[in-house]
Length: 247
Image (cartoon, rainbow, N blue to C red; front, side, top):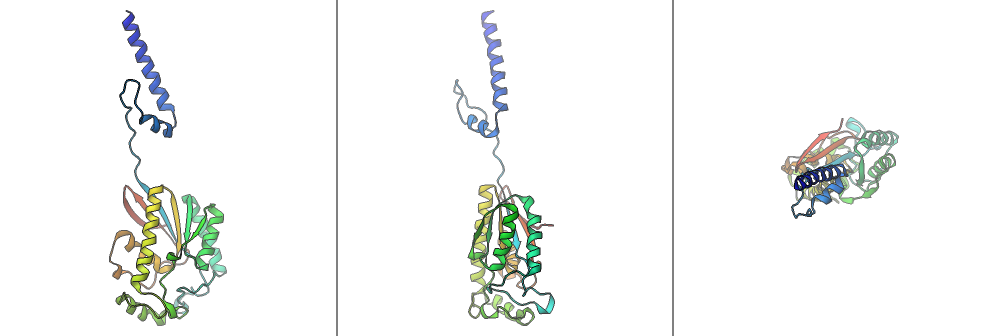
């Protein structure tokens, strides 16, 4: 009888221990699960969490050169600020992306991107980190000219990807610079399981899907693109990346 009582008492004790273990916070249970029990048998390890990551790609607000139709001029590396509509767009974009819980904002160091980033930072509380490699394609002396007049030159330069624009950089130089930074931010988002934002420019947006999916850089369009204030959500689930427009 004495041994039966001992066995019953031991089973009750084990059930109590299990209940206490399950009631602990997950971070504590994870630590305990890696330890040995008194009898030397390990606890069952919890399932590993899936690898997640999210990068929010944001186009800066409008400037005085982002006019509609035939009046639009190439911005390039010209350091033009946001106009009144662009400031309003930045506020609207900040209100849209705050729900993502952004932890840090990486921004092109040109004024229009920094102004957009600062507006988002005020709403989200996330710090702004300037990153020159998020700048657009440096088209040198073409900056400031009417888009409709220089489109043939943009196509010419993209078809000769190692030829630099006058006073600027080649298509390959731009793509290599930008893709390296974009992929690094994707890795940062995945490894930290945090939401990272990047504020950049229209040709960076046009190149993004090709960079993300490892496509052919020579098929990227150099004209058109999403409007100012647009947002892409780039997500990683179990190592697979996807990109979609944030509605």
